[in-house]
Length: 193
Image (cartoon, rainbow, N blue to C red; front, side, top):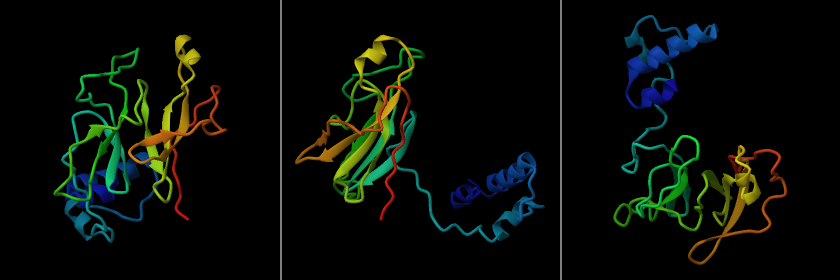
């Protein structure tokens, strides 16, 4: 977190973060900051990355971006442009959907985010991740057994598998054998080999 704050050029916030971490954790950091200006002299003060806000961020929760080929996918609970809004039964919050920005790498052709209709349902979607080749997609979703939702109980999560078709993602049936209505499984991640 401190390095992120430094990369965004917030040295005072970074210094406060380091000081707070040390006081809360009770552990002695190898970096002591007596003066907030000293933070720029710390060995890690030179950012090895730059954080840039994308123009797609909304006032809603936008998270878990993934680049697949030329398209950027991310989760968001923003309302869709179609006016179709799914909310949770408890607090009325919008449910998360997957959004896609086509031709993300090409700034000339880049489009605004649109719901990924081939991946979204009336339930929560995301996060998601592709395989190493970008041909298989693993996606977290509420358990799709309708009986669970009729019981008005806490719904479980599962990971669904999609393969890239000509124009859209196609769901693979049956899903992963580790999915179960007895527990939640979520947040897939593929390690590159």
